[in-house]
Length: 394
Image 1 (tube, helix red, strand yellow):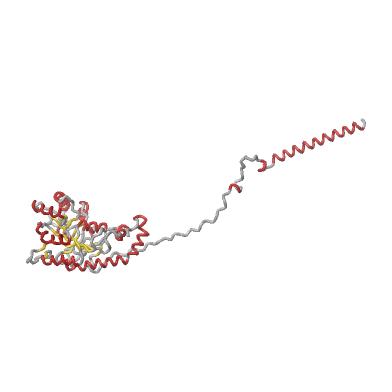
Image 2: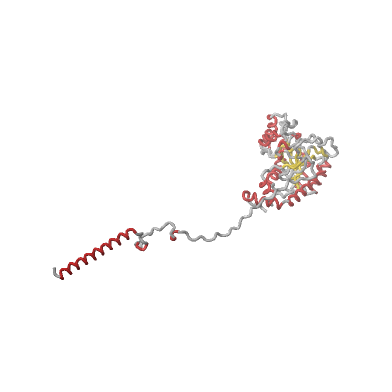
């Protein structure tokens, strides 16, 4: 071989090796690239990038400091005051309430559209007003002169007469009535002449009605019935039930048939003649039992009257006794009946005049006691009652 040929072989080998090395490097680079993570910059411009869970692009904005909250003060309701008491009543004659829900009571008590605290009702029963010149022979009688003095004294001390419906609305709902009210309640059957003689002058002069505890006996004549119907229609006399047989007071020995005869018998007669149902039952002879009270309520009566002169009436405040009194054995204890509105007390006409000023003072004391505790009761109502019962009208 000549030198040229030798150099040609050498050159060719050199070139072949260089190509081999180049191909080897390229293959090695490809292999390394396949084993390495794909850089984000190699993604196409519009391809969604999958980021690690904790990548900053998926984290919420750094939270700011929460606002400082002022804690709501928890208001503790005050204790409600005890029921009003007075030294003017007998120690055994204590006030009984009949509205168990304090919110209901307080809302009615402080509503300025209703009766003001301290409003009192004096119930006076008249069994017999004697003719001029006659003198009383029994405790339940009053002379005509004493009757006139009693009516004058009531008026001078600013009492005004109301009817039974007004009394019922006052006791149940604290409906507005005169601050000093009186219910004039005449027992038994009387002809129109009796009412025209003794009560019409006060009806015409002062607008004072009178309540008649009417006996619905079958012995009533058509004339007597018609006189009562006319008096009722005129508005002067408000008739309420006083039984049918009447002369046999209800007692623990009375069967249901007799009790219901007295109660329902009165209702039937009233509906027939007066075209109304009586709302009050004046217990004949003052006789009642807890069972009879329940039957009276079931028959539809809302009020009942005893013959016990324990004191005046106020809203949610009835003076009653829970135990017998050996010094007053004829006064049946009403507490066991547990329905104060069905065992309301009455003053006897023969000594009612002695208690007029006393009733007036009880009302004044009750008004002052209510005013002294007004802020406490209104605070209690605002905390406990207002969310459910609403605001009090003031």
